[in-house]
Picture 1 (tube, rainbow, N blue to C red):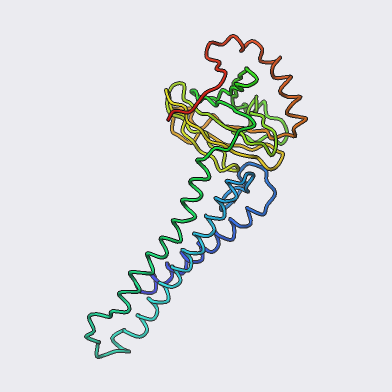
Picture 2: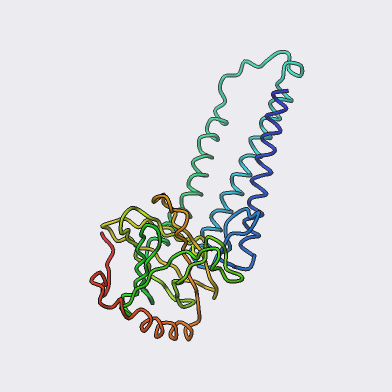
Length: 285
């Protein structure tokens, strides 16, 4: 009975891994909405080159893990069938097998190398910020975000909309009163800092997640490939309203961005005298 339960458990794990991989691929092919879906498995659809690479690496690992799991399952079945007391009443006294020992040493090393190479490539891709078209400073506060556009010299706060204020199509607990607006197909350099405690700026569709730490400026970047609104949340436990400080990034065309920028300069003109406004911020080394 114990052996049967273990077999069922291994089969369930294998099927779950295969199912997750298929779901992740389906999500990658689904239309981007920039938010999670009911009963969703896998990652959100990619809306940036970084996220596309993350999904590829995620699926590569899932298939590799599935293959290893099924291989181990096959070995267990062979051992149980061929070497049980009934089928093999006289057990072998073999204690060493040079070939097997060499194989089980070399193969795991090769597997780790196959994982490490794309992993390091992806890490460097995420960390190396290209020449920016737009720079935005995101400041995490208890419990909302403030966005500065240093080149245009204005800033504004972005707070979660209450349920009574939601418009049709706006997601509960994710929609905000003032979106962070960026142009499509442009490199956006995001600088993050915490005003009080540690926060974390994360937008899954762009594949970005970076801590916002008081007294230190961190950096990340993304290049949105499709117009739309993409949502994220603070991903660092930061206090009692941690769950209520979402991030909304609205990606628009160049013309729409230029028009929004002019309106924003007028709308947030009062912030021009803010002593915390900076012409540009450089990340800490």
